[in-house]
Amino acid sequence: MSECDLVIIGAGPAGMAAAQTAAQGGLSVVVLDEQPRAGGQIYRNVGENRSKHAWLGKDYSAGAHMVDGLDHPKITTHFGATVWRLEQGHRVVWSQNGISHITSTPHVFLAGGAQERPLPFPGWTLPGVMPAGAAQILMKTAGMLPKDAVLAGSGPLLYLIAAQMIDAGTPPKALVETQTPRMMLNAIPHLPRAVFGLSIMIKGLGLIRKIQRAGVPRYKSASGFNAAANTDGSIAFSFTHKGRNKTLNTDLVLTHQGVIPSTHISRSTGVTHRWNAAQVAFEPTTDIWGETNVSGLHVAGDGAGIGGAQAAAAAGQLAALNILHKHGRLSADARTQKATSARATLFRARAIRPFLDAAYAPPAEVLSPPDETIVCRCEEKTAGEIRQGIDEGVTGHRQIKTSLRTGMGPCQGRMCDATVRGILIASAGPNADPIAPPRARTPIKPVTLGELAAMAAGPDQSS
Image (cartoon, rainbow, N blue to C red; front, side):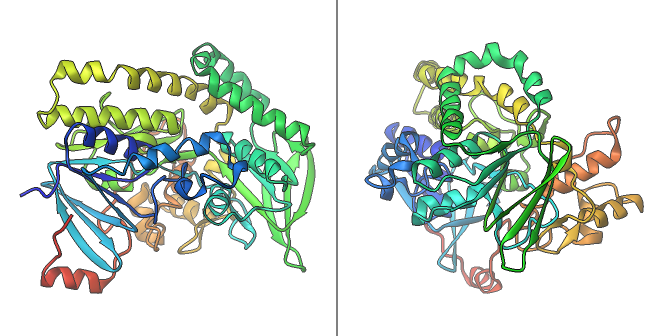
């Protein structure tokens, strides 16, 4: 017997929009999210920050109304809830406060969002070097501001964080950017379509102008990142710029090279995935409503392909409308009519993606870093060790995982899968067969033996 009509995994823009649409259509909805509050990565803690931290910007504050929308009698939320297994027959297994629960439902909507693409280079594991997205989480949750930081990599998030730091009175020391003039030339053919996302382009240009007006140095076409610890505990961040070696001393290096879909859960369920060459990442295969090849399972938002907050919210609405139709609450015609606005929003939000994907493409040395670089942080395996394994005959993720233990630590490959794949692709050459996505098995997140034993004795089945 189902305990609710729909379980939504993830309370970011896609999950929140889907929950509101489904609840307004009459479905009982359970929302599960690992974080203590709704918002996802983009709107993290926005409900608590609505009257403070103005430097986070109006686009961030706009997420507050979505959090408010979860206050609906048909929506039940569980925060601090980690989903570690999706079973056939639509049983969702999740852990909260050390106790695992099972919730049965006819429909599951996966809105797991995205993760930052790893930007590995020699020294990236040192204290004082961290992903820019992690620094932004501290800004949103604790009001902690980076000071005198070097921002390294490329992508719109790097500009957004730099602008927020400027508005907060702690401008970055410098931006060290990997995008090249060639990448910008490659992006130009996508400009006509990008015009449909004009508001996003205007926002991006505004961020760049703010950085320029603040006098923040920008080193473009940089390569050869390297971080080393100074005797006083600071970081010597080195790179090559215009053919010359350059070193900046700083206490904090924030790195970013775009985001990729978070696919661990969808890969564990048998959903078909495809290779997105433009975004250099795997993503679930879905139809226009977010429906997958697994009956009753929808995936949308950045977890189904990177598009940003507006695209995620619109895709969440479309998935919820389709679930209402599947549930018999909406006719096909009514579903199509109600989808008009969301489809238009989705089109405009996605229009700029081909331009951004080409302009801020990850360089080869990020996808396949130098030998001395640690790739698997959990097991401390280097790119050189992986290449040695390939030279000795291993041919795929599974063999590398088995022989070298990459992806066998606590993160289960969430940090290193993308880089291992990049090294495999670079080693195989341009004419090699496509590399299949790595398997993901449950538990997809760490769970204690005590919890498993307690479930064997008699699981708590509750929504």
